Length: 266
Image (cartoon, rainbow, N blue to C red; front, side, top):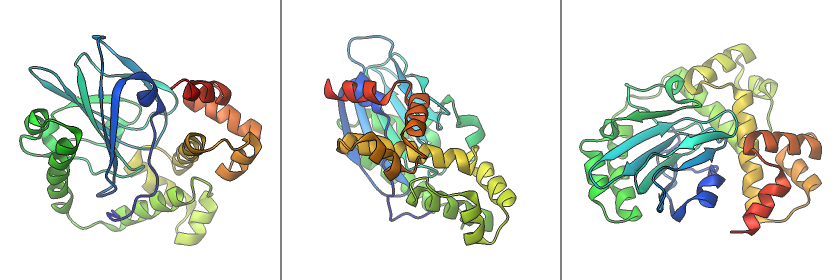
């Protein structure tokens, strides 16, 4: 894993749009993108939506007498995200295609699903220590210390793991705008072999991952400027504006114009 670089900050816009008291702390280390924390407010049960990002989310639901931990892989399209019935959530979002799992878990178990787990799989007494902390900064430090030991305690990467790492980083650096034939030429491995290796570690194909990265690149641009749609399509690697519009609605669950109106209401 490349531990020193951050390439993209995966975004889940419905968290920012749909919950109370959201805070975020960027932490571009060990394959982590950022930490986030929010309150579920007065409602006893919250249901948000997740969008494709190619990432793993680890969520600690902190209640008065218990902590429930969920881990989620990327979704395939806009999907309900059940958050449970406790008041405070502390989340860890990994960079796309990164994040090391305990041996008890696999990507096949996580993709397009939310799995309740023992949060202590990532560190001894981790859930208790996170629950006892008083703010997002303290919780992030606690998690980073535990996860650092977890990461550096792993064996060196195998040849296949290094191939997968290369593919993840290359696709992400290209903002999803790269073909399997280009990856084949760069690596001197067959397209079939590259697809097999990538799917073995990520449970999605390189093409799916590239689309999710392209979508996340579009979300980032929508959050930072008011570029015309035809220019956005070109910048993000879509065939044309119509292609961008269709894929955005499939992944976000609403049109680009509806999304921008929602942003303006915040």
